Length: 375
View (spheres, rainbow, N blue to C red):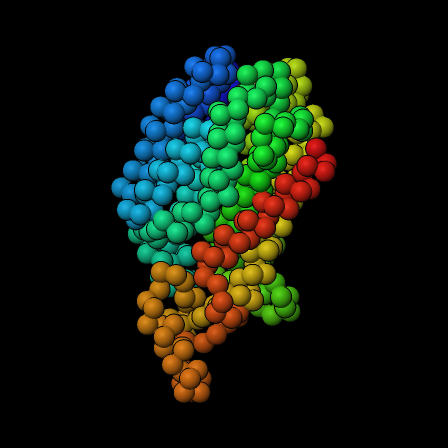
């Protein structure tokens, strides 16, 4: 058990070297309680998990609201998503959510003062801005829905893979009592969080790589840092690592809860080198790369990127809407030369929140299809 907690602590801390012990408390508490719960029969597990979920979801939502990284609606949405994920009948949904939240939060704070100089709408004192309910759900809806469906199917029907500790969620055994297989739900959530984590790390850390990124739809064209659809070698690297981080989270959480998933031993070393875990890690790494690339492609084509000429900054969702109206007005009057805002790339079809939602949904679906074929 100590080795398990150490591995989880290392996993959460790997996103940023400056994690404090308080940041690991939710992760350690969650895994510790879940590991203890696996020794209990099913009727005894759920009340304890519900209590743990309420406490941790409240902590995370209140912490975000207090630090002004979440609006009131964002905090409410975070609580609902957190409770549904953490109270599910396996801990992997909650584990992936927590690691995504922690890694994304820390990445957002890395050199935030530099990002404030590159992108308009960033407050150097409050990195990341204030996220509302729509933004929270865009980065969690698919995983949130999978957790709800999994719990609904497995609490109501109580199939053997909950009551029998020797049956793993990844065994792929069909069960007529459920509408969506357990493995499919886990793979959907894995693909979703791999995409979201990869995109967040690529966006928040890739912008700091130095130099000018290249437009994904036209690699010969360099664009200002922060441009939607701008890619760099470093950003691509961290997006792959983000996907692997989610895969490692899934492997560790499944091993803690059910050793039969990757072998009969509780050894993390053996679990990490088993054939199934290697496949899962490769799948999540590719999902992260694919999801980040898809997000970039959609951002370069379906999401408009505007640059304020005088400030030399890319406009974001946090920018004054008057700037976008200024550009639209200049377009209508055909006075592009005198406009203070110019178009860098893309069409005004989708918002950043919508791009995040659709890219993560597509990645989740593809991950489930491929995962069911190879696992």
